Structures are given as C-alpha cells and as structure tokens.
Length: 152
Image (tube, rainbow, N blue to C red; front, side, top):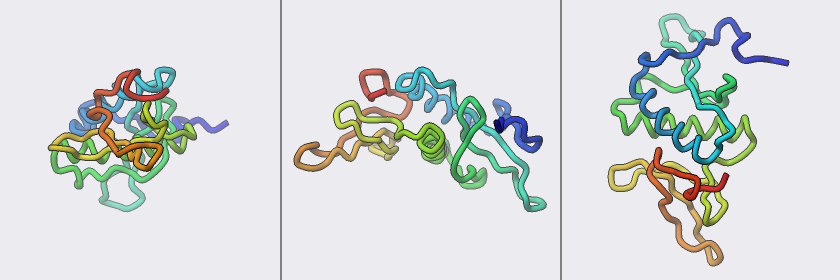
C-alpha cells in the first residue's frame, strides 16, 4: 500500500513557513473537527518544484498526507482573506476526492456548501435553491461551523 510520506520528496510543512496558510488551515480545521470529527486535522505538505528556480508545490492534505488537486501558489495569496479562500478551495478538493464526499454539508438541504465572500467575510454558502429547497443561504463563517450547522 502506498503511504504518502514514503515519497522522499514529500514533506510536512512546518508551522510558520506560510503564516497566512497556517491561519487559514486553523479555521478550516475547526470546521472539519465539527463536521467530520473522526478525521484528523488537515495539514500542508510540500514537494520540490519540477522547474529550477520555482517555489515548491504546497498542497492541503488529510492527516494521512493524502491530497488531491492543484498546489497552492505562494505569490497569489496577497492578504489573509484571499489566502483563506485559496486554502478553503484546496481543502474541499482534498476532502471530496480522498474521502469521496462533499464537505461541508448543509444540515438544512444535505448539499455541499462552498466558500463565498459575504460582506467582507468568507462564509459557507449553500445553493439550496429551488421549489423544494428554498433560497440559497449562508450557513456560517468559515471556521464557525459546529455540529448543528452542518451534517456529518
């Protein structure tokens, strides 16, 4: 069986290497703990770039080291709010593809939610629109989900 950390090029990113991403991951891990309590915390992992002189590739991974999706671009996150949006998107890709489930889910509609900026704050938004579902709505700010805010 393949173990992600058996790959000699893959390493866990230490706290403080990417401070904005660390802060974003801390918020997302609160939501993960509230909605998927059996999962360990998400983490950052890195691989060397395949191109000389380019920064390493950093991914959002499960506690096991598994990840899915594109790497985070260090030069793109120009403020903490933008970093949170980037990391939230990557976290959702990893959870969805590695665990085969949408995350987080809206308790009201049993639909996967997406991060959306509302009045300057990144929040979990449920599309929940339609005759049987009602209008789309904000469930909670990213980092503020609790067990009553989302389905497990």
